[in-house]
Image 1 (tube, rainbow, N blue to C red):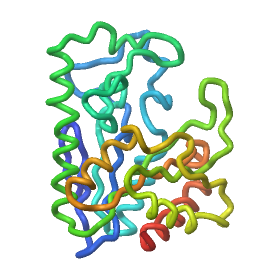
Image 2: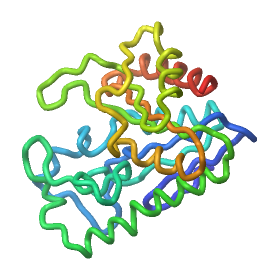
Image 3: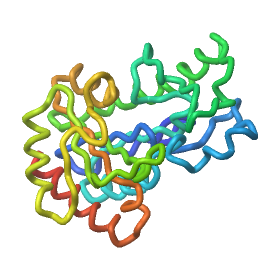
Length: 240
């Protein structure tokens, strides 16, 4: 059974040795008790700014198929972004689509600390404990991206992101090629520069390898394509 915390969902491993540990930093657009969406931000709820659409369901299904442990955030990335270092300019994002985010206007030092203590740290503590409890497994971060970003369409369908582990990323890239998808390395952005902070920092601490997969959201929201992607990532997990 999933272990629930107000800020984090942990799915324990159901096999003795899983090839991967799954993490999903942008799994929810919920706000925990103590915060609410201002009216001006309701436009963002259910959009890519607040959540990686479709990725939580795929991550849970993948954990079930692989028997892999998974750690999923239960708070919106707009409250605080679990995939950014604490000193990042976008840890608490101020603007989306060129408009101020009301939730994050004039955030006090006290409010910032509440977000760190109540959401950010519990997520990272859970992920760190999960990695420690599953020796040898690769950390695989699961994310999704919008097909249209600030008016610009994106042709890439699957992105393989890396920071430290370039050789592993090339291995994953080769495994995903020729399967009917536009697969690219380090797109739609690079995993370097803190953009896959969560999986990489924890993997590095435990002497593990880390990758981040970015799947285009329109594919995940199509049931048949999402099912196909589930099988594809399941296969990939066994060759990492």
